Image (cartoon, rainbow, N blue to C red; front, top):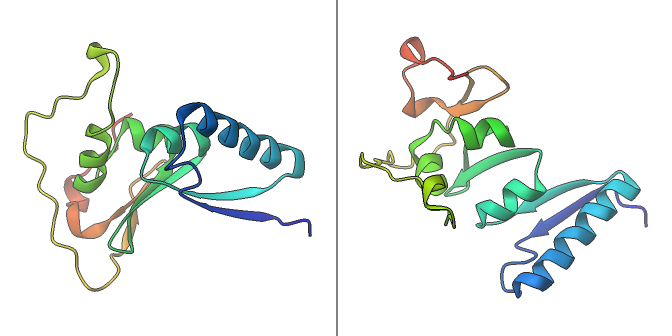
Length: 138
């Protein structure tokens, strides 16, 4: 069939860690060998980081933030993204994210938010940022 796109919706969510690794490695090998694009959907942000080049954060079917993986993990802007990233379990206590401030997630509008490019190909839902006062951290 020679697909150009694979959509993988939670492909490893209920699997043992060793089986997860086998499946993820297979997906990466297929992507490389056949020059495939993969839309990888997961709640496991550690796996998302391992598998993705760009990351989009969805809530209620709305895209709230999208950027290259290193950018979004280093510089999350949307409160929902910050909350998700702070919940990633860390083995190394020095790497744990301890959020001192309470993260307030704005109520989700019934209308899709307008995404603003804040630089570095990093797009954020415009309802949560003050464009005039925002600067990208480098």
